[in-house]
Length: 242
Length: 285
Image (tube, rainbow over all chains, first blue to last red; front, top):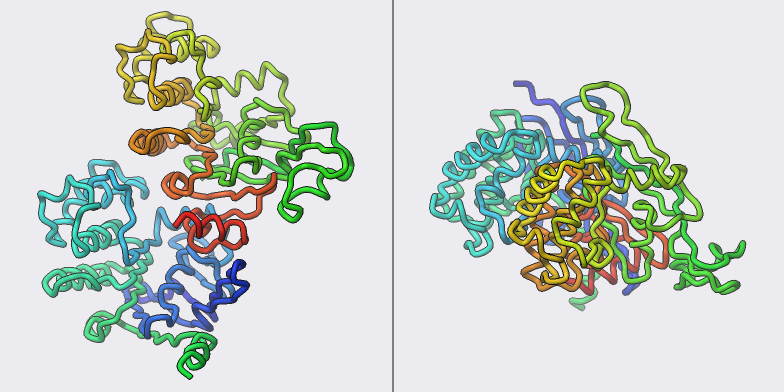
């Protein structure tokens, strides 16, 4: 399968203006990279380098301050995610762009099988189909079957993260954003996640993932983007140190 | 995805009004009372749209004009300027024709009543506004069906009982008056009444405000379930960030009668641009 570019980030920058403090807080500065279908681009760099801000900018949880985020959808012309109207973004989130955040945010009263089947239902699959696929994915990630009917609210960090990943993996999006996908997992579960990511790559999914472990980058990444903290933050730190 | 509603330049004033009402009110002046004539500018120049199956949140403090917006759309109030086009999806079935557009504020009273009754649903914060407390729960629901020309008694009873079951009110209590019900149950009866004509558009005005937390949660679950099953579009007015986070795909933030910010709900909550929204989000978390 040829690896075609599906996402091009050009000169993305993000600053927050905090009105109360009248302060401009930089998060990401001048970020450039490309994500190809069937490949994984790894975002690395120290804490505060703006890695999560890049993912949130792509998902439009953050409004980009500068730059372009050019996405090639499955049908039609490319779209600048930084500028696209909200309905287009919502449609893409339902159909082709998924984001596995670091922490699971779900309804406190929903069973995990329902949480995981939701993306498939959003894509238009029947509830029966979606439930079956969700169960298969929970099984693949070795989440004990007795937990499937329970709400993830009381689960451990590692269990929650598995639900979170299962929800991102199950719908085979075109573009999958992963924020430290293996951070809270034990080595055995990490292996399962690695296998799933490799399978998604073979299926043509383009992935953009934040990793802190060099061995994950070595095993999974086809290209690596290293981010540095924005300059103003660095100079602030130096000032504080003096 | 098709557009269901387009609101453009909606304004509502209470008072005699003067030419300077709009230039001396709003967030910049921190008031919605005109300094020259004392008119209350409840809402000015509101523009937004809503797509089928979408939930739009309108957030803001008391007196920001968020309820005024939905009251105008449900014909409870008459706006003083602006337009609203409702693209009725009923005319979309199995055809390639565009949905039938209604210019809401240009319709006569009878046409407005018909739309409000059959194509829109409204759930008020105060159940007294949505329900007649002196007639039975079933009778309240039947009222909307009768207006929609359903006259067969057995059909009406069956439909009312279906809706009460769906909103988790025991159909055995169908013949009791809502004045004997708890606050949460009154809201459920209001929701049942709003849904009985299968409207594609539902307005929810602070529906969980003042209820116990557990009752709030159950009502919100019910609303989400309805949205999932029937793909009902909704406009949810609330001052509660939790409700916005849970229900709304997109959110408008209002202050002093103006929309000061709008965007995807997660963006409004995580990357608010306006100083007022930043304060609001910071005080909630």
